[in-house]
View 1 (cartoon, helix red, strand yellow):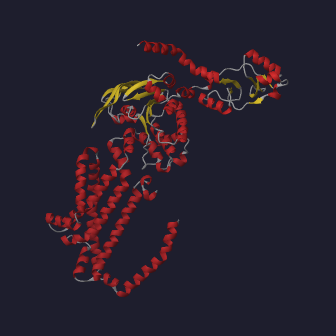
View 2 (cartoon, chains in turn red, yellow):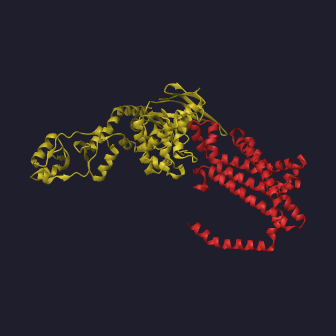
View 3 (cartoon, one colour):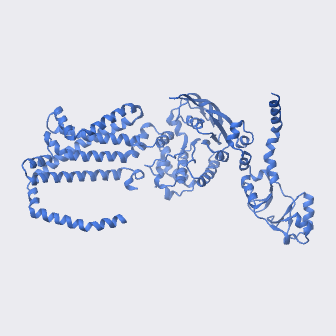
Length: 243
Length: 387
């Protein structure tokens, strides 16, 4: 209740600010300037989404199973090293990853997807791994004591209980991913980076803003989507946002 | 029936070889509760967990209803053994209904059957299915969670149950309640149960048999009464406590020490009659006054009967409390202490007088078991003196 009142309290001033901002943008001709690139925006946004969707899906499809495998007891010795390697990997700037990817695969769509895939893989693997290791031992003992096979235990107990942490990893990964896509332009991957970087080069604020705002909008949308997925897919009993 | 045959577990640790269970031989008869008792690290939990092979035995066998489980597939073995642990282990991602239905689902029951079973079981532990089926474990109190933990283990109706300190994490008041509920449930279902505890009081209350462990060895395996009256050695003596004779009180019910009260008076009888009957029956202190339906309404003490004249109805004292034949002697002793009484009348469900329990009767009953062994003790003492 208190939260609600607070949000109402801030609602009105916020609306006023948004309105004034809109009026200012309209007056300054910035919106018209940006709408000038509407066709480019639509085309490049599609490309941007494509890059994110493909590399993100790949990262999830590879990252979760990888995290699961590393968390299995028989891989425990390997996984300590692997996680250290991944942690070091996380420190490499995404631009550097793209550059490395280019030197490996050349320029264009495929090296961009590959670079983005690598950049978003790490958080997913790490969260899956730590999430699964964090499932309390007594739950696993209870599950095996009840007569669940290893795969039943994984699917019905371990993954659902680690789901919230895994989703947090996906959320981080996709946020990094959407934010890195503009850099893919530098190795010929296309996307909204084209408007941003060209805008910077030409001192064309409107062009640059058109790309930047759209990227920001995409990032927020993707974040909301993943959060919604987590809200719906993580069982209520282990979902802090539904408690 | 659970039979352990030379069951041994040796752990290879960094600090050397540890024998957690050393050639354990025991048998839990069909439908009985066996409590494995001992200090921490004595091997009781290891022994329990070897039954469903959460821990693999180094050597020896476990037989369930005469069948060797050594070569049985662990998954199907465990589905036939209910398992309850101290941390309860309800799966927080599943509703109570889903939690209870896990095993039936795994072994392929039809949906309607396991849903019905879940409701039935909840009702058995006095949790309303309408309220609890769709809840998640974190919405339940600790006591409620443990009740669900127990009925989850019962869901597929396994013949055997293993319980690893199931009530250890519950506060003392709720623990008593759950223990009572569980015993009631057990009397209906008659499962063969192996139960780990470190609490002698819990063991005495729950067990048909108690197995005392120390350093991986089974020291004594006996009924609670025998264990308390004849501890095998100093370790067991120390473990069951110096008040072990008092602990036996809760193992005996009133009906076992009841002295039938044949002589009574009614309110209409005179005090002289009362005195006469006391003398005839050999009652030293008092005689009970009953109404027309044989219900005790008061008592006449000998001192009143000897010094006063009149009708019993006018001079009787009120009875301060009564006991029931199924009460245990611990309750009775507590009532005696509370009311400063040396005897208490016992009444049936309809309130009819069945007899009396006396302090002397209780001490006599508890002492009887020691008399037979006293001569042995003395001979041992003599031998000790001689050496």
